[in-house]
Image 1 (cartoon, rainbow, N blue to C red):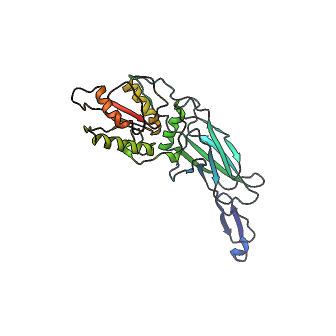
Image 2 (image 1 turned 135 degrees about the vertical axis):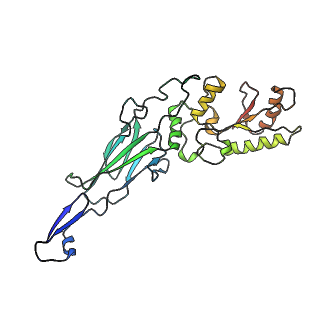
Image 3 (image 1 turned 120 degrees about the vertical axis):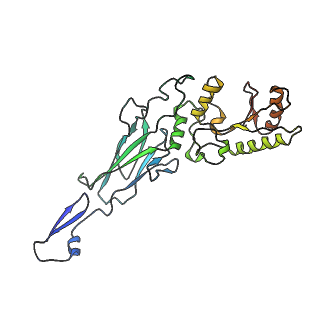
Length: 308
């Protein structure tokens, strides 16, 4: 009996050439890696892991880690390689992994050399503000023995930026002054306060929840009672920029607290039936003053209040 070993798939093939003997005797003389190579990809600072579909909530500001989750036999090494999904250097989704290769049971890298975004001038009559298209990359892990020989087949995973990652990327690509929020900062709760483009994700502070309910209730119970509602709270950077481009017709306020869910706008109506004016604005403002800082915005159709 002869033994043939295919190291790529660890297949044993037997051919009878003599007296039969036990399989256990053969295996005593064969050394195999105990497990097939496997790994996962995550953002260590965010405690965010890849999903079974290969989605990850990363943005280009994050350090990304690849980690082996199977036992690497003694004397063996893992070689890593990172390749962007888009290989055209002029593309808005191309990047350079830094570093793009390494050796070890884990490997960290950053995304570098992305072109500026937006790579066009948004205009009211033309192309509006848009998020950068989804980023993606392929991680390839290769197991080698002590002599540098490849053992088995390299393992590759394609990782795609999730919708939450794309949302976080907006805070990198646009000149928002408050920094990039963490993955854990976003919530799907209180959708009535999410006026952004991502229905499953928003930044809604406890202050905003309290102020929204409090001003509406206080105004409705005032003398005279007035009816108001929330016209805006959280806005993601792209949505916020388009509000200024298409509605306000002024330069974008990139430091707005709306970008972090720490500002609420309340609708002003013709409360005293003499035409909507500053009198109506002031009737509502007196209730909003109790919940934060009222910032005049040169209009009388809403009262803007933000967290102090």
